[in-house]
Image (cartoon, rainbow, N blue to C red; front, top):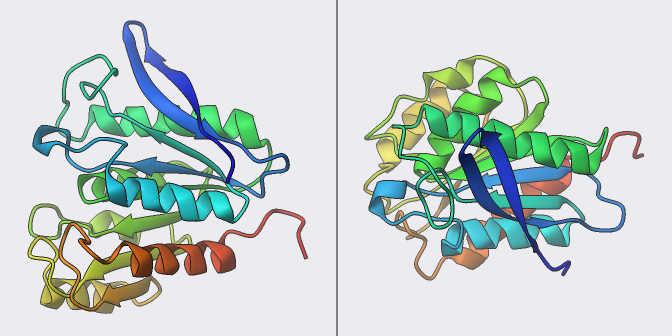
Length: 214
């Protein structure tokens, strides 16, 4: 496993984000990972965020996880998911410089899934998006009907923020999206981080090939 290095992301004057970047010798692409809601204790050290980072790193992808504004060592104030999109775009800027012309993807967990979906819908550099436990009881994910890039949605069957019936409705609404239901997993994936990692790794392996490969 490639070790992560601490980096600072400049979003704009007097707004910086703390982040951790891991880059293999010849990255096959890169992925930014967005954490859950800042107002409910979410940060880049969340176990789900770390697990996604680990499995993607094992596939030879450069990884960048970061703290949204107002979290940890990041400056600024919570911006209700609007300014946080700018944070994610700034993270993509850093990763794009790191991996050159290799594919870029974005992943997000819970609130981070909402941010990732919105950013993927408007940033042409993003060639894949992984949405972990999208909180369908809190946000509309109609933005997924925009750019039809390789998209993964993963949720547990016991997730009260992403109820199984709502998950199935979204699956029917967007049949081109790849979905994985993890039996018995709740919103926090307690005891289910291994199958979560498997789902993300399998999707990334198939859907995020390096440009020019094969």
